[in-house]
Length: 430
Ligand SMILES: Cc1ncc(COP(=O)(O)O)c(C=O)c1O
Image (cartoon, rainbow, N blue to C red; front, side):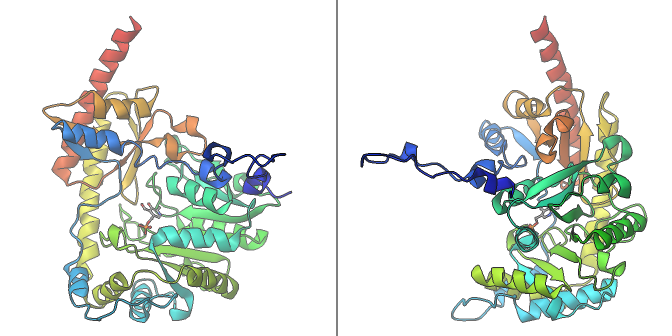
């Protein structure tokens, strides 16, 4: 029998012998809506807003919203849009954007991509949903590395896919398990492995050996390999950015998910792409894309203009800034007694284990009961990034998206908060 949402089939209303009116309380919400968790990144946002309304300055380390200015070339592209009617774009996406994006991928990674392999989506988010929908039927399984980008859990719930978590640990810098360990989780329902590289939330970056191992595994076991490369360019300590197609040119098992959100500080533009050399996957994704009509017209026009005119120094400067911020965050967190911190090799997040039993309670405390010199720090409790929630109970995720001085100050406030939280917890126990 199919698993997941299919298991939940049941009559949507209680059967009634007599024709009595049905009230709203008789009508059940879909199983998929009930299973979709709230975002752990946004869940405490209301508390942060209340703290601000009370006059506190809130350092927001909870969400991957960079403070770097979006490229002027994008805003120029918006200003230059001259059409009298804002019409639908084609379902595949703006031709100029597809061409420019392919050109830039070929220039940087020499992967031989043409417009036949790319579909423009509303952010990497939509590309991920398309990937789940084209590779899986309800009840099928995708292997993921745990902890994981929390929204994968939501995408899986909405598409009826069962995510199977492969545990990774902070003590091993969140390295992916060996092939033998991964194979133990492959079942007759497994359709794909999903890798986020560089990783959100762990900051881990796979070596070429690890990537090759996953490619071989997927080829030999007949699985798709979905690789989320949203943070591709942000790798540190001498690592080279990698597009997986460099290691497996034109491999039909692979689907790459890409995004302009983080690379160009364009989260609100909602532009991503799905890249595949697999003709069936491409057709399937294209038909789903047709059903949702198109991604936004003006933003695609502006993004095409941006990619045509922007200098390569934009991403280089952003990269240098994130190195500085990462170093500041790791340095400041390491100085707090009892905190265990991972040192991210990529992306702009890190996980830190705190000397508290429940990091969500601590994160709420920071927003409701604590301020230091008029400021407090908003962090994301990490349990929501773990399929095995218990494993992340004492952990927080920090996005190093604020300037170096703000990052250091935010973490100083966090350290003061930890002292106060411990003092109050001890007083409550007495
Ligand atoms: C790993 C990962 N994938 C996908 C996304 C979604 O990106 P987009 O804004 O392109 O939808 C994010 C956003 O934070 C992310 O961290």
